[in-house]
Amino acid sequence: MFKTNTAEKKFAKRKKMMSMKNKIIFYIIIVIIPILHACVFEVYVNFQSILLAFQKYEIVNNLYQTSFTLENFKTAFSEFGKNWFMVKNSVVAWLIMAIANYPLSLLFSYYIFKKCSFGGLFKVILFAPNIISGFIMAILFKYMSNYMYPAVVLALTGETVPGLMAINSLETHFPTIIFFNIWTGFGTCTTMFLGSMGNINDSTLEAAKLDGATELQEFFYIIFPLIYSTFSTFLVLGITSIFTSQLSLYAFFKDDAGQSATWGYYLYRHTIYSDFVTDAYTLSFSELSAIGVIITMVVVPIVLSLRKLLDKLNPCN
Amino acid sequence: MEQKKKEKMGAVMWILFGILVLYTISMLIAIVWGVSTSLKSEDDFLMSKNILGFPSLNKDDPFNSRGTFFNLSNYAEVVKGFEFPVTSAYWYQGKNIMRYKTVNIPIMLVNTIIYAGGLALIRAFIPALVGYVCAKFDFKFNKVLITYALVTMTLPVIGTEPSILALQQKIGLYDTFFGHFLQNLGYGGMYFFIYISFFKGMSNSYNEAAEIDGASQFTILFKIVLPLTMNIVGTVMLLQFVHFWNSYQAPIMYLPTNPTLAYGLYYLVYNQGDRSLATTPHMLAGCMMLMLPTLVLFIIFRDKLVGNLSLGGSKE
Image (cartoon, rainbow over all chains, first blue to last red; front, side, top):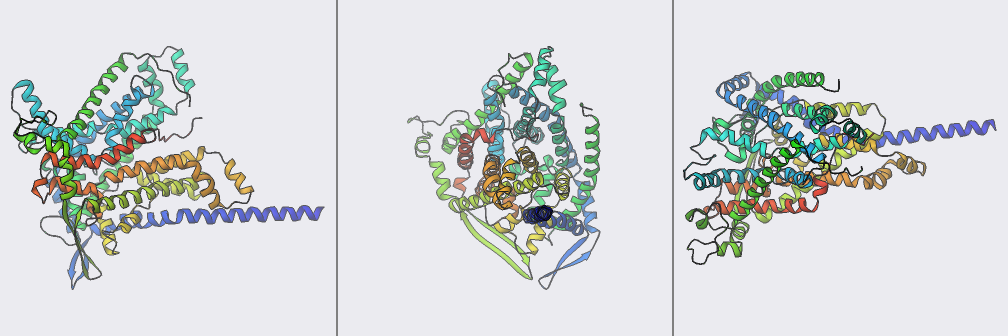
């Protein structure tokens, strides 16, 4: 009997080891491709991006030749100097979105969460701009601004005004773009906040109701603290995209956003025409990489500091 | 989850109701105006200055839109007549690789189905598979995968597109669907964390029972786990399909000679070769045609698309 027990134990141990071995093989097969992808398209690409910033490419005998240079950073700083307004536009756009869009999305989510009148319909309408192409929304809005707005003003006041996005209305371009981004930007935030609210325990809300909490009290003292992590995640993600956000400028203006341009638009617009060796009209891959490296070095500490600050401001602490 | 009862609305809710009503009206006005203008003739739109109204169907109006409206002429002219040249050129192993072709709506439709369908599959399944192993397999390497995904999501690295383009050109995969699909084989992003939460909330009893019966891990994954998760994976795939259907900037950058319908619409609006299509009604007709499939999907699957893909996992 003793020998049988030992044999059984050995068999069970071997079976467990085989099972673990199979699990490990399975795990490796599943994660190997994403890991290889991460190594090539993220780690290597980011490393290459930094290297590119220090390289100059020339074509010699139909082949690329590289040399070390700091000229790309000179060009990058020169571009920053020429285009300082783009920093202002990028920051102002994010601030306005943070002040207008996120709080309104929170309130809209709360409205829908409380199953108030037509909540289901509003949920669908708020999400519609995420389904309709951003380009289509931009073109519709552009034509409405340029044709419908002057027609409405003419009908109401008899006054002839240019369209908000007309060529000769430069002062209204940027505010109109910001309005458009707020108008179409509720969908994702509202859906995610609503999802977080859905995870709140019913008993917590019922207890608050029994204690006589008003809607505002329920929102500020219960709902918001419990979904704060989702809210702060969105704030952080917003900051990370502050210099990559294009505000749909390419859809509105193609190559000529003028004084409404942001750094995200500028980088995209140059990249699509760029090459290793380029001409006087656009920047090379190396010059664009240098700009990217400088912006990254500025934004990363801001993001890390903001995350720490938001953690400290967590109302649950 | 229990259905919550409707509560009496307070003052704050009434204010929000008012704002949401105005928002809904503005959205509906935009879409109705777009459809209405796309059915007008150019004369009706500009000569009659019929900007705000519906298409003029008055026979006595010299600039009426009867033909355009009843024959959907703007739509037909865009489908039949719209085509444009696309080119790309780059150096690869000492050779100048140049591509030139002329594309039309049917070609762009095929490109769009390949592009949106392929990327939707990849971007739905890869994060799901990695999310599954991170949630169900208690290995220390999971922390590395999760931390890496979190870092790449929240840490801004700006200006990597030139580097990606440079890499694709160096390996000769620039301007190919295969190259672009390779570029999107990553597992990170918001949906990865949603999948982890979802799989952690899923009972282990199915897996354990299957293991006892001798099923391999692949059998468990494909015959038990994936069928049970098709709801959430399907929703993510739908969302990604809509996203890639509408995407025009990535095809412009990475697939210049394989344009999708969204890229084509962009060209129609800004670069019309055929000036007869360079009218506002024609351009809006192109917009409406691109919008129609996603709008149909939205109406059919609105509960899934607007459902709560939560980062919070199951209630505890």
